[in-house]
Image (cartoon, rainbow, N blue to C red; front, side, top):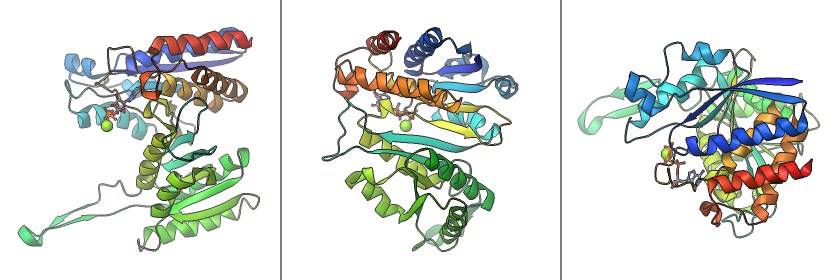
Amino acid sequence: MNVLEIAVLPGDGIGKEVMPEALEVLRCIAQIHGGIRFDFVEFPWNCEYYCETGKMMPDDGLDTLAGFNGIFLGAVGDPRLVPDHISLWGLLLKIRKGFRQTINLRPAKQLKGVASPLVNPKNFDLIVVRENSEGEYSEIGGRIHQGEDEVAIQNAVFTRKGSEAAMRYAFELAQKRSGHVTSATKSNGIYHTMPFWDQIFKEVQTDYPEVKTSSYHIDALAAFFVSRPQLFDVVVASNLFGDILTDLGGAIMGSIGIAPSININLDGKYPSMFEPVHGSAPDIYGKGIANPVGQIWTAKMMLDYFGEEELGTALLQVIEDVMESGIRTADVGGTASTQEVGDAIRERLHRLN
Ligand code: ATP
Ligand code: MG
């Protein structure tokens, strides 16, 4: 029996609406399958918690979470109560950094039954491996001079270890998929870091001779995501490039409300965190119309991550069947409620049995 202890953080806004649907889906899978059990422990750490306690989570919050196999997160942020930088740094980034979640995985795949905004989307199915801890997002730099001579300097930090870890992860993943890794670079314009990135990519590549590789400058790569996304299998990118590409990946799928992600701790010392790409969406919170597919697809990635790939594949198939049947929320052109989509997915899961 695969017993998974999962810390559940629904967070704010629509996180509180989509999380229950995903938990019910996982419970339903455990009930049908029998070989897997989830022990969910829910924590109410969000912006309301901050208003009561002055903190997004207790001081020993990370210690508490460290004992779990994984962290399942909804969405964090309610700018009406707490400025975004406080809620983000106080919870989400604290977990990502504290648990060394150095890789962010975000698939972009054309789902059956969800219209892509692309004119000719073909059947794209790619995944971006984003280095999640260093690169362009550094605190090194500063400002010099004043007035019209003022200058801001920002240093990007690429470690051999950080880049190599992201690339190895990408190659390993490609071996289980279509066997192709694309590197996002910009070594024609960025003098130091990107040639280093290219060099490491070439070195890592020699350990995976059966994996095909390509390397594109980020500008061309972004354009290809729009014109020919079917070219890509696994794309490995630095922190900033990966950030931009994965938002674009969500956009070409048709709605940010369906996009899933994982923040992975590679050394296995801390739990990884599973979260949909979307935020707390205050504009639609409380209406019962949030799309639960992002959270449920994230649950599928969690199943895959814990070695239950067969169940993960079956779940995605069921999500696609439900989308194709027309039971969809408004963001993907339907009229169904959050709960109706969740119910339809669970009902089909039961039918599989
Ligand atoms: P954050 O700062 O946390 O990213 P945000 O409001 O800037 O929050 P999102 O919460 O992702 O960004 O919302 C962006 C837009 O996408 C909003 O108009 C929102 O209504 C819509 N949206 C986001 N998630 C969903 C969802 N699950 N279902 C339907 N619409 C969604
Ligand atoms: Mg936002």
